[in-house]
Image (cartoon, rainbow, N blue to C red; front, side):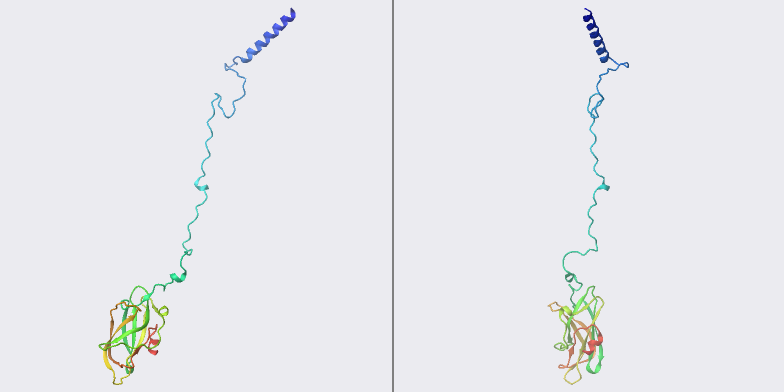
Amino acid sequence: MSTVRTAAVVLAAVSAFALSACGPSEDGAADTGSATPSAGATASGTPSTPAAPPKAPSASSAPPAPSAPSASAPASGPSASATDADYDVFPCSTYDVTFSAHLAEPTTSSYLLKITNKSGKACRALGHPVVTFGDLDGQATQRGEAPGIEDALRLGPGESAYAGLLGGAHDGTGKTVGSIALTMDTESDLEQKPLTASTPGLYVSPTANSVTPWVDNAEDALSL
């Protein structure tokens, strides 16, 4: 009998202890006995807001764009010979030059012929001048060898070329004229307007007249 009573008392004590453990705490809040919520959930059990995604790298941290080629870098393409300043220099015509004639030696009717580039671009004085004598038929014969077109005298704007015209000695076979006309050798059928110059007393021998090729100085023009 005493054993049964003792067991009843122990059972009652255990029940009371269990009730006190599940009951309200001193401040009125229920003590669930559970651990602190994990970092992934709020106290009410609702999942926390996910962390914001990482920001995109700023402009300052982006890799630099490739730089444009320097203006001083040589461009690819044709070789230097194809872009040479003389590549597109055309023959001089009478539209490109002014013309004058000056008496150099009366006894041989020698005249210094001069042309000057009046255009705004370079041109080449090719071969010999084409000279006719007033109202006489024919033209001056050529004296001396002229360079080829690639080596012909190049005249920049304002530059001059010279040629020596020889009328010939007074041998009684020729005539005297008061002017000459000049056109340029262009190695083409380009139509030109003849340029004229006064040559008072120019004696023209049909067998001894001649003209030199264009050169770059007066002295050579008269000595060829």
